[in-house]
Amino acid sequence: MNVKREIIDVLNAAEQFFKQQRELYGDELLLADSTPETTSTQGRKDTLQQTQQTAEPQNTGLLGSSPPISPQNTPIPTGFTMRAIQLPLEPWVDAPTLTTLHSMIRNCTKCALASTRKNFVFGVGNPHAEVVVVGEAPGADEDEQGEPFVGKAGQLLNKILEAIQFRREEVFICNVLKCRPPNNRDPLPEEIAHCEPYLWKQLELVQPKAILCAGRIAGQALLKTNATLTQLRGKIHSYRGIPLMVSYHPAALLRNPGWKRPCWEDVQQFRKLYDELKAQGQHNA
Ligand code: SF4
Image (cartoon, rainbow, N blue to C red; front, side, top):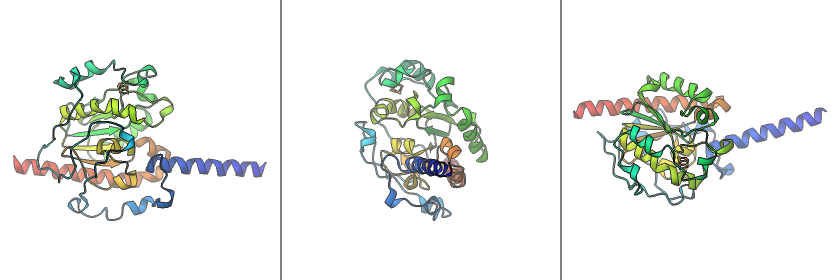
């Protein structure tokens, strides 16, 4: 019995290890190159200016045939500099407000997730938010309630936001996908290709000062990269001229509490970035 128990423990440990690797690195497990999370924060005490970097835009398999985004080599802007992006030639692209956009896309059936969703999950929060939080896709609770980041992961996100002096109501929260992938699997490239333009339009309407991506997939999607979470964290990227940072998804933190500390460091950096942007805005006003 003891041997059987030991084998089960080893298998459980292996499963947990591979889940963590997948969250950090995606389907291409970079086992040979896997760096402990603690080293990824090396130099994170540097100033924001020192750590400021841009992501290399790459058209990757993850994103399929999505329209390209402008090169991202812009420094932290001194004001809102969101560059134009080519949206599909569909009626919703002219929506003047989030409310109108919601009503125009809520019955979307562009991908197979339309047939399995309980609710379309548009997004929630301040339509003129200075900060937008982007996750990857609705989970079971979100699908049930039609709102992103609810349940335990949502409560944790609320705490994270409060810890850096943001209230949930003052930011805007949404996902790359508006419908839940079955069994919470990762979004498929074609699903992202179909759905991401809605997110681009949401960001265009909200015009945030800064974007916080919760998790690898949201970061990869908006930055057009296959970089790992370890590579994406701790840097200021640019999405169409808007500073963007990537940290852990709250659901991943619930599974791996050891990641809460590096996440805390990430969001503190994000707050510092936001404060600098605010100060620049006031200075330029
Ligand atoms: S996931 Fe996006 S593209 Fe697919 S059906 Fe839902 S709203 Fe439409």
